[in-house]
Amino acid sequence: MAEGSHVYIKCENLQRTGSFKVRGAFNKLCLLKESNPDIYKIGAVAASTGNHAMACTEAMNQLGIPVHVFVPETISPSKHERLIANKASLTVFGEDCMYAENAARKYSEEKGIPFISPYNDIDVIAGQGTIGLEIFEEQPDIENVFVPVGGGGLIAGIAAYLKQVNPNIKVIGCQPRLSKVMYESIKASTIIFEESQETLSDATSGGIEENSVTFDHCNAFVDDWILVEEETIAKAIYFMLSQHQMVIEGAAGVSLGAFMTNASRFAGQKSVIVACGANISMTKLKDIINTSI
Image 1 (tube, rainbow, N blue to C red):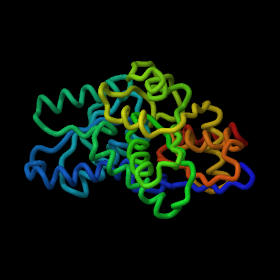
Image 2 (cartoon, helix red, strand yellow; image 1 turned 60 degrees about the vertical axis):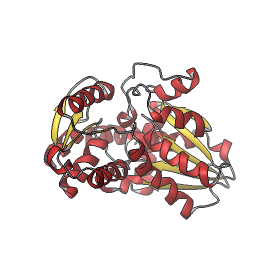
Image 3 (cartoon, one colour; image 1 turned 30 degrees about the vertical axis):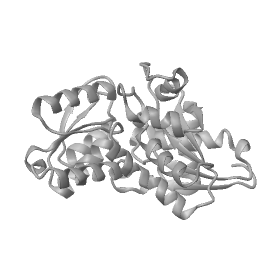
């Protein structure tokens, strides 16, 4: 870490279901419950690489609302097993989250039930934005916030809040170099389609839905972007485990790795790194440990 820097970790890896996603899922389902009493009968449908699915399942179990979840074929075995154990109603479809999302939307239209997007939903984004609220309440003089980015729901919520209370706070989007659709979309000034390669950051992997509200949020509120190599993600995961006895997933390794490889740029500044989750398979974690020792 940079000498003289003040660095804080926002530990969403300790959140219920092991991910920040529970914030948006609960907010959305609670609002649906208030606006549509029939939700207890008709339920809702969601799509996810795993974390959003687990969050929706947790909310479903707590609120008594039936939720059917579409997950891609690339879902990690550990997340799939946890979903089954938590009595999730699952459909496995498509090679990445974009295919699963499209199938879930079609299912939603055919059945006439609400679709809960993992990122392209203002209510979900507002739920994730409570992280920004908590960061500012605890560290009002923060200068930089590093946020991992997939579809953009997390950074959209955090950035929208922080820029409202202090426009001088720099919000930095962090993506794996092997799956950088939002970064390339911002560069192109339009949402683009780009194939993602396999990455340790499976929670951020995949495309962005056409006309996603997160694109405009990222375009307006994100100050800088950092792309992170797979080796750096692995080093960040090992660092948290060996130095802080904490397990983080690949997506959290992206934001931490982004800071670690650019620490000199932020020397003497106050930064927060959002560790978005802890849902990594034991196989991947074992491989990282064996490679790092």
